[in-house]
Length: 430
Image (cartoon, rainbow, N blue to C red; front, side, top):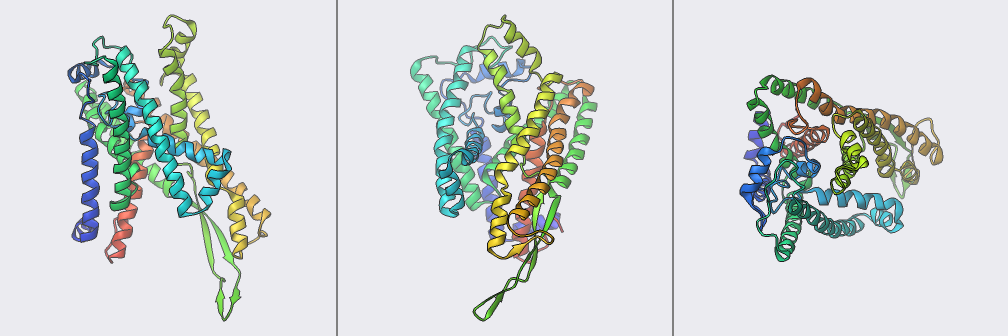
């Protein structure tokens, strides 16, 4: 593997792409430390040091690399773009025009990308307004009484919204630059950078609290889960497909045998993000209500990572979203029609409707295993908190974190490996 790294940097084209990717990642991390105008940086550091419990904004803070709670210019991170992308994909089921654009190929995808950009900016305005409002009201840091806003005027409030919204646009642009000129998917690599940047400091804080045994246990568990994630993400169910021979003019086409690769976890990390986002809404709403009201106290007691009610609801929602998202992204009828059009068939099944029914039968059973796998990975960090005697804020990784880090790392290594093989070098995975 070390020799493959050396060969990658000896290849001028690949070296240029790697250095460009690292440069964009460094710029992204630098922007996470530049404070938004009107923010008191010293007060924020004081409040961060006093915060001992997990914040309701932890999911957004995770994808921003800790920039959210520091109210930096990149405070929103990549979360508005992720949300916009998910919404556009879901709208394909509701709006026929979006489904038509998806089937038009590169031109339609470019139009959908444009809609995603517009929606990202709109969500950036909404999230920046909510974040700044929480900071101004003192509800962002529940255990800190200091004001983190230095200038509380309406004009500065508008300036902060514009700056954070512009930061969201810059992050989106940086991710697209990496996709075009660098290595791997730019948005995924920026998320990977945000998550990986926080883990060493969180592990160090656990160790400084005198819990070095917990640090060792977390690292061993991280290694074991990473191996399991790599194994499952690489696993496939291959459906054999044969193509009949056809004569077009004097040339013969078809007569080949191939397969349809079906991943066990076809939905990726999306169901976990869906479930976490929705379960974060009730505590967010309760934070604006009367803290002595019974419904607010019930939500505060049950919507915590140590509550069995929360964990059970989390597992059920992850299962449901895994089936829902797979049904959206994988269409057996479309695949069966394409196979029939080009003379393909699955041995033992007629082309058309029987093929679609068989594919639907297989994908439902594969998704069952993939959904259970997602539930186990998502709940494991929460279940580890109790035996390790840690708080939710001290746990350096969650189920979403593990899936993203391992998945993005694996995909990036595959792409580097592919480009190395194009230059006749031995790859990383050889």
